[in-house]
Image 1 (cartoon, rainbow, N blue to C red):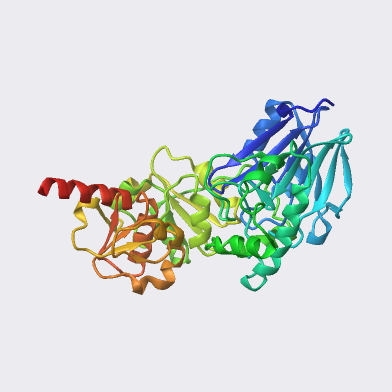
Image 2 (cartoon, rainbow, N blue to C red):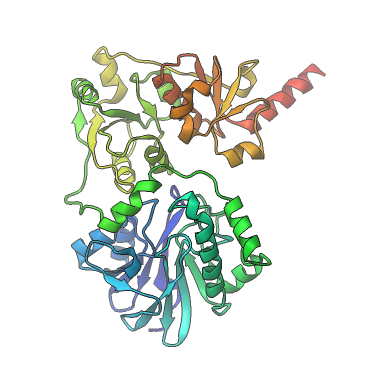
Length: 454
């Protein structure tokens, strides 16, 4: 078909650090690879190019998002391609190592590449005998390989050794073969920082530290040594993806709620998630609300901090995109969406609703107050405010009693700090402030104070 780079479209989910792919097969049909349940971007790309998605391939049972393959099969009749070893409970074409699928004259060859998961497949795309590229999912990624502890820390080394063999298998492909990974910068599947999301076999053979490791043991030490914590929801999505996410019907929407509706929902156990900017939350919020500002990483923190079966009520500011709230929740399996407070906090205030606030401080206002650093451990080690106590945000609800009295909560910019402050406040703490900024701002303020004193 004369395949060119224009036939492949990469669609990044910057919040989760992943890429899905849409391949124009040249006959009005397309192949989607590792599509998430949020199909908005994929469908727009398909419509723009006049394509129907005829095939939907998953490289593995994803832990960080719900697959969109089930929805594509329902809506468009797409044939789902996936590993036979995954034992998925919905209709699909099960593939084993070496199996090939004709996709409009191109060939998709399954390569068993376990390591990230035990049933992981990569897909080599061929035009005749010429290898065009390989969809590597969570096997070979730019500058690394994806984490191997998703099936338990006790099996991490076993899967790291499998990952070693899988990467070396892929590295035997020709230098010019494109590498199209799913996991990339920003993913908690341990992708390194950097904007580059695709690469080539030749580039990775020469530059990927794991492929240049001298032997298997060194590879395993290096890979396992880089593993940090990951969101709590990772532990439950794999099984949902094996069973198959529920098919969504009409366009999901958030119902408008009155203050009375919100109170009634809270009485039934609902959790309030306030998605407004930090400054808005600081000024006034509903007691017990968790602050998770709507942004690219919203799904990550929602899935890390809220129970999977929680009934959710959202508080938004005027102009915030409620559709984005919905889809970020749905793509990680949060489906009990009660609605949003119509009229926002103005409606709550007009109804006489109780409010709380959180003090915001800048770096030069910390003074002698103790600091709680709630960033990831690797971030804390890389540089922190001297004397700061380190408790990761994902662990804070269970370790709230470790926060010092009269504490200033810090992260990198202030977004996660406000989330942490809201968690502490919900735990009964009222001596909490959130830092606007992070260690760099503290260092700058300290330098200015020193210069002013000279």
